[in-house]
Image (cartoon, rainbow, N blue to C red; front, side, top):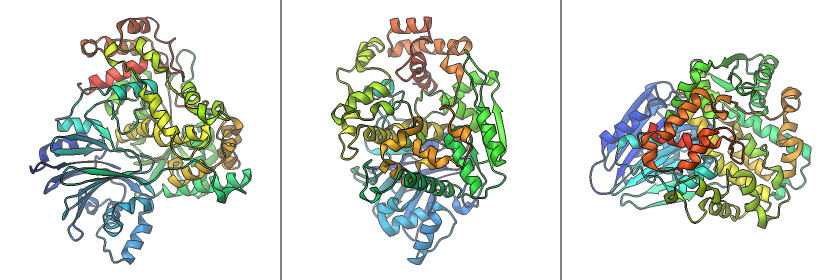
Length: 593
C-alpha cells in the first residue's frame, strides 16, 4: 500500500520534478517507509512506500527495469503475484526482487495493458514506456485503490489523493456544480470521473487509460459484472448457492493473507467481519489480532457493539483489543478525519475508522475488513422495496429509497447560482439502469451500488482513514470473483432473513448464531448523528465563517433554521442534513479553498 504520483508533458518542456516531489511528499502518511522520484524524457514519477512485500530496498519505487524499458509506480497488492511470477519466469523473464510491482512490469511487457485482466487484487498504477513515451494508468475492478488526475494545457498529473495534486499547484479549484448535485443527492458520493473540484478528475474503476506523448488518450473498461442469471447456474439450489458463496469467500479471505508482515482483522461485531474471523480460524490461523472501536452514548443512542465483537473474539480465541474512545478525543478527531479525506465524505463512520486505524497501526500494518457485503449481498433496508418493481419504474423506485432528497428540494438549500435546471443525478441513475444486463430492478440497483456508489463511499472511506496511519486495509467481500458470483445469484436468495440471506446461510456453523440473527448494526458515532455542545459549535463556526459566506453555497434562511434546530431535519436515509452541508464547508476550508 503506497502513494503514487507523476506528470507527463505534452508541450516539449521537461517535467516539473519539484512539483512531483511536492505531490509525493504530501502523501507521506500513505507511505511512511520510503520515497522516491524518477524523471526521464517527458515524464516524472513519484512514490511513497509502505513495506508489505519484500521489505528490502529491492522493492523501492519508482521501479525501473532498463532491460524492458519500463518504469512503474504501484499502489495496492496483486494477490496472485506469485502464480503470475512463475508463469512469467517460465516465459523467460528474470526477477531481481520479491515484489508484485516487478510482476506488474514483467506482465505489462509480456501481455501489454491487458495484463490487468490476469490480476487478482486491488491496485492503481502507472507504467511509462521508455521507447514510445506512452504512459498507462490502471485501476482495479472495484476501485479499491484511488487514482486522481489533473489536466492543464501541456501536461497531465496524477496522484493517489486529491490534496496531493493541490500541493503540486496549478489546479482549477472552482466547484463542479454537477458534482455538488451528486454530493447533495447521493449522501456525498461523487461518482467518477467527477470530483467536487472542476480541475480534478478520477480514473474510473476497472479502467486502463493510455496517454500518448501528443496528449491524446483513450480508456478501456476491462470488467463489468452483468447481474444476470447464468445458464451454468440454472440448476443450483439454495443449498448450492450457500456452499458456493462460502467457498468463494473462503478463497477471498485466504488470498488476502499474502504479506511479509502480520495481518489482523477489524472486528465490528457484525456478520461480515465476524465471518472473516471465523473463516481465518477455520484455516488454522492462531494468535489472530482483532480490533473493535466504540464511543460513549449520546442522546440515548448506544455507541458500541462490544457485546458481539467480544463474543466473536472469545469464540475464536483471538488476541482482541477493545478501543473505547475518550470523549475528549472526539472533537479533534473530527478535524483530523476531515484532513485525511481525499474528498468530502459525510459518513460519521470516517471518524470511527480514523480513530480505530490510529490504534490498530500500532500493532499491525495490514488488516482485513468487512466492507462491501451489504452492496454485494443486498443487506441494506432500501433493497426489499425494489423487489418486483417493474423495470420501467426502476429509476423512480431507486430514487425514492436511496437518494437524500428530490431534485426540487435543492432550490430551498442552495443559493440560486448553484441550482441546476436539469437533474444530473437522475440522469446518471437512468444511464446506468439502461445499460445492458440486470433485467430486474433490484439487479440494476445492486449493480449500481456495488460498482459505483460503493466505490466512492465505504471503499474510499476505508482507504483514506486507514492510509492516514500507514495501515493497509483489504476487503475480501470485494474479491471480483465473489462479486461476480453474487451478481449471478437470484435476488430472492439475497433478500431472505432480512437481507444477505444467502450469506447468513453460508455463515451458519462458522460463526455464532447470535451474530447472524442480531439486528443490523453499523459503526455508531452518536456525537455526530446528534449535533450538540462543542460539535454543534464547530459546525456553526464553519458554516458562518466569512469564507463560507463569501462562497455563497447555502441559503441563509435554510442555514439559520438548521442551526436553530440541528437534529430534526434528516435526509431520506436518516443522516443529519446540517452535517452534510457543514462537512463540505469544513473540507473546503481545510484545503484552503
